[in-house]
Length: 601
Image (cartoon, rainbow, N blue to C red; front, side, top):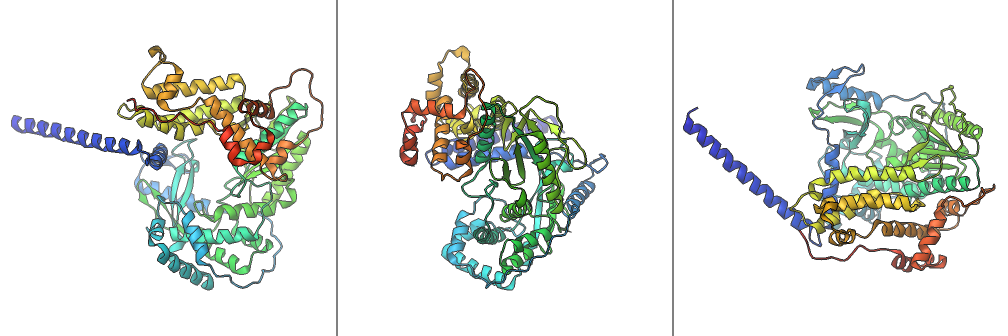
């Protein structure tokens, strides 16, 4: 290469880099302008979601380990390893006991109506990855009434023939890292199936019909209307708090089911559906959805060849959650004691007992009942927590001792054996910093306005920091910890430090963010009003009003949740009777963030 050619190359390279930087800056300016507008609220959530997905992206992990721990780097070997792993996982059942056959429930086929289809299509979320057919749900939403009429006729034809299109039987499995363990170990990945969106619409129709026939026990809080993870967390905390107040021992077992969704025997599912009185035509519909199911695995080196799937329910399916909780509800119905002593959230099970002997008996009964249905208790991940200090182990049916825990992360919130919220506060602070790091590309960008940074903090980071806080009886120390974290985040987002001598109030005004102490109070009162408006038989209401026998210790008791609520109500000037008027309660208890101020950059 001559000197002239080299100089020309360097000049062109410099010009190209300048043009790329210019285009990138223009794109970012346009993005920030869009996010900063009043219509940019949805874009904030989409951006946060995209950054969260980017944090899970492991496309650079191009090697995996085989069964013996040997690292595989050859693309063909890597693809074969993924195929072998999922083929084995989704085609092997645990031993189980044969159930008594139930005669089918006869009944006429009820055709789908256009109103049902319209309701389901409206609920479908946009922006989701399409299945193997490449047809997203946006197509049906854009077709309007004509599309609804066509879908109604199409779904009725499928129901009458009891045969779904052959293309619906194929799915693509996307391995999602669980964010713990070795990234090259296939067992640390969860396989999510991408299926046709049109099939998802049909699944939602079937799900809606099944929920009208089957009633799930109040012990189950997952995927059931009017019940949530916060309900289960609140009940567990209330029980531990009331037992601690009366000096009564509290013992909890957190059961972990091994590959519950992937190893559920389908023959058990059909038997359970008939046992619950579901019409046979609907049983046939669900059976046909699973007959002849095949899948391919999407890897960084391409997609594997097809393999059949004979066991389990589809992860990523709209119908699978209800099928699973219905099956679990049926096989353990004789063991359900009702909240607060049995808490279920899908396959997360918490058993509460007054003594370790009682807890031991409960665990063994559950283990045997699950084994009869082809479900297996994971003894390595099942943990036991006790409020007492006595050394007493709990064993499974084979004599294996369960791990003893002083702290356990239950549905995203840490529970402590001593009933305090110290671990929960520390856990949320850690999660909030992880969420902060996902958003630092915007929160630490000088081109981004501080008003927009405040909006992203309020919509993305703060909800993570406050998750589960409606159940916490916080002390001044806890509030100071949370306030310190919040102010550190806001100052960094502003590009300031404490050396700049800018008061906290000015920082909050710039970022349009109310003090977290006031938001915590508002969240507690919001939840209290929500529980009080529920009927008396609701599990959360029962847990809040339950009485535990025993004697309190002498001296001042430890702070209780209801003590925090009384203090909060006194501060905002509301009464117990005000909870029944939802709008009034919200107006008086909510703490709004400061109104818009001038955009300081």
